[in-house]
Length: 337
Image (cartoon, rainbow, N blue to C red):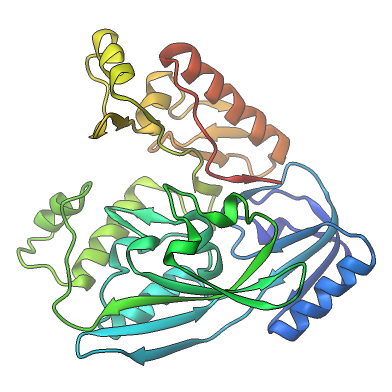
């Protein structure tokens, strides 16, 4: 247990906020011990995975627990499917690479997403036509109130767009300890129709892509658009893509004929990056904070010296300008602490 501990290395924005208490745990017993300490001392909890989806706006007056639970196990369930279980502290991209090396299909479109396995169900992380819910089986969690183990299946997780029970009624009630996925061992379902994957594969002169080819294409696309958090502080996409009624989209089309949208029944998903860019934010910097020059959806700690409050205020300015211009209110994807 350490006191007045800087969390700068534990959040990808690189914000220098301090935790009153800090501890790292590598198994469930250590986690229970830390949770009991926090309960006995009336301390609020901050559970840290990869730190890639949080914004620390101030010092944390409680106990920050870094989850370092590690390990991967497998169970063949048919001649073409396997269950792969990863502990919460496993790095997400390293886990994807592990599965690709085994020729297990299903995760390739989710390559190079920052963070750890344990936080993937919370956000229902997704990219290029794939979401966690597509390959998710269940997750083992620790109930923070009872300190008992529970299992949540696909239906119980209530997955939505960048959403789950762990961000709604279950928020702050559970710690995800491990996640199990169902992957293919052969006859993989290759998804190349979403985004720029098809163009990238054509650029690489690949006509019949493997799951590794798709992963390489996704990595190339992400690296060309998104800054590396190790080089410049960021949390990836800061905002969710808003979904609006079809009628509202058609009205906007009258005034903004180039507006982009992906219809789904009587609603339309509008790319947040396009909205932000139209409001003049792409590459714009205010003080220590900026919108990335290649992807306006990404807010960066441009100087390395930004406070969480500066980043939060910058995001508020973006939200206000998009609402004023388009009548659409953006929602932050990043968790605000």
